[in-house]
Length: 196
Image (cartoon, rainbow, N blue to C red):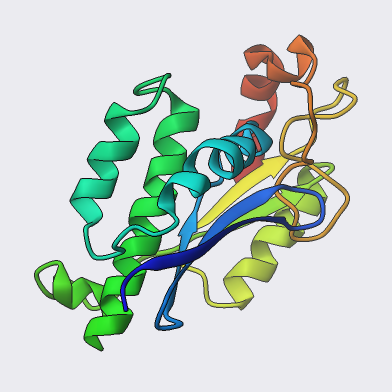
């Protein structure tokens, strides 16, 4: 039974709002889709809960393109980031369901494997260069071949993306950082020192 019987929006992760959509079919098979839109997670969650989820119940989870078109053409704010992130979450969850029902990995349904692995990177962070460098070394010791480094900038109270919490990316806040935190010159003066 591919009929959608339930859909739930899950907002989680301390210090950051990750949004996941869980769609369940009548046969108990469920699919997950990511709906995280950096800085606007709660807008997407509300859009999903109040506008998308009610329209999913009772529909055939196997009609992926039909549902995509329905959600896209029926949306009041077409092509906006909130709408498109919500539709993407539904799309991914439905493909997840289709793969599980077919007993195949999703890449097999989409034409087969085209590579044997994917390069991923670690996100090193620190309040200063020394702390960020130590975090880079930690990722290298874990086997990462690529590391993104970010550190605090002297004179800025709270730089974007830097926190004292380990493994946190950025705080989930309802407002944007102060303009000075997005100022390019302080970063351009400091970033080259990360590579010394």
